[in-house]
Structures are given as structure tokens and as C-alpha cells.
Image 1: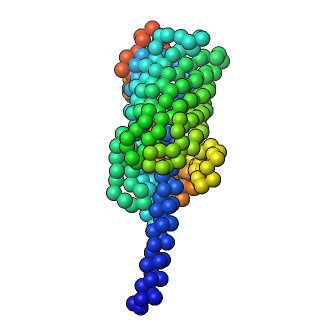
Image 2 (image 1 turned 180 degrees about the vertical axis):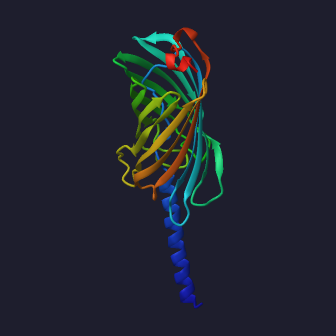
Image 3 (image 1 turned 120 degrees about the vertical axis):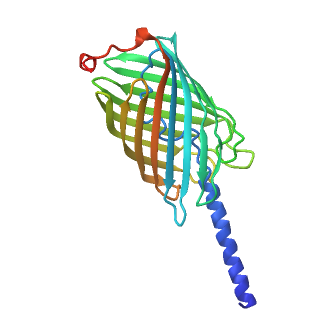
Length: 291
């Protein structure tokens, strides 16, 4: 190769490397501390019976990016204490969630670590006619794990649930506000809004129905930031083994913005009542008593 050819090849390689690094930086700057889709299948608008619950939602997703995709496994173990206390007529519930994540970006080696811990309080009201509403206020704490968002986030959720006639019709808005939009390494974190949607029906111990979720970075004054967003749809099936309830669902992006590819994700959730107030447990139906 001539000297001129070597110079041209080196210059081309340098441009390609710069573009690759720049795109990797952009795609790593998603603003949502709350994983989009994490509350799909639940009924967070309705108050839980008094008790302590363990809920673990685990998912594996692959984003189709040419030539190498990005894969991630996100595990969300949490504890919810539905207290006997009331706040303006609604049940007070306390939440602790500790994400654990592992990811491979564009075929690179997997990295893993703990994500941001969520500490929150929620108040859930029964509005009548099987309608319920809840409000959650909490914070995602700072994290030292380099592959996740590190800055603290003020977190709010607004959920409405209809749970009559075996239905779970739920819309849950998840809103995050960063205390500081710049990390120590210079990454930019925009505020975010997620929407999780559920429309499932129970048939005895079985549950089935469509689900969907969307997420978007909110407008920002940073002109160099490429806002990200997505909307995914899928289907859920669940079975109540009594007392453990299992749910599985698969979702697929139908649109995305600045993620470089569509994601397919499989989800599995286990809900385990550790303790429940027997006075609040529903009476079994005559049909179930036959078995």
C-alpha cells in the first residue's frame, strides 16, 4: 500500500471509530431509571390486601442493531408492604426495589451490577364501581454501577385500575425528574415519562390478554442530545398456583426513536405473599370450593 493509501485508510478508520464511539455514547444515555414495561400485568391502581409481598420481575431483551445487537437481562426484586394505615382514605403501601442488570452492547462482553435502589411510598384508593387510583412518590438512589444511570431521580407514578368481573384494565404513568442531569462522567440524563398498559381477563386461575408500554425522554434544552422513545405491544398469560402467582409476557417494539433498532423482550414475574391479613382475604367462589 502506498503512503497516500495508508493515510486515506487510517483517516477512514478514524472517522468510523469516532462515529461508532459517538453513537455508543448516545445510545447509552437513555433517561428512564424505571424500566419501561416493568409494571405491565400488575394492577398498581388498586390497594393490596394488608400484608407483605415479594414481587420479582425478570426480563431478557435483544435489540436488533446491525451488525451486532444489544442484549440485556434486568431483574427487579421488590418488597411491598401494604400497611393497615390510611392516608386520606387510601391504603398506605411502602415499596423497596433493587434492580440487578447485565448487558452486552453491540456484541461486547457482558457487564453486570446493581442498579438504582427505589424507595417509595404509595397511597391507593378504592373509588367505587371497581375503579381504583393510586399515587406513588419516591426516589431512585445514586448508583456506582457504570452501566446504569447513576444520578438520583425523583419518581412519581399515577395508576388507574378497573378490576371488576375478572378484568384488569390498568394504565400506569411513571414520571422521573433528575436532580442533576449530568453524571460525573459527562453523560446527559433527561427527565422521562413511561406508560404501562394492561388489559387482561381472569378465567378461574388463568389470566390472559394484551399488554403494551411506551417510553419517551421529555424535551430538554440540550441541543446535542438525541431524545429516545419506543412503543411496544405484546401478550400476557398468567396462572395462580395459590399462593404464588406467575405471569409471562412477550413484547416487541413497533416504533422506536434513536435506539437504532427494535427490541424483542421476554418477561417473567412471580408474586409471593409472605404475609396476608386473613380478615382481608377474599372468600373463595362456590365454583372454586368444588375443587
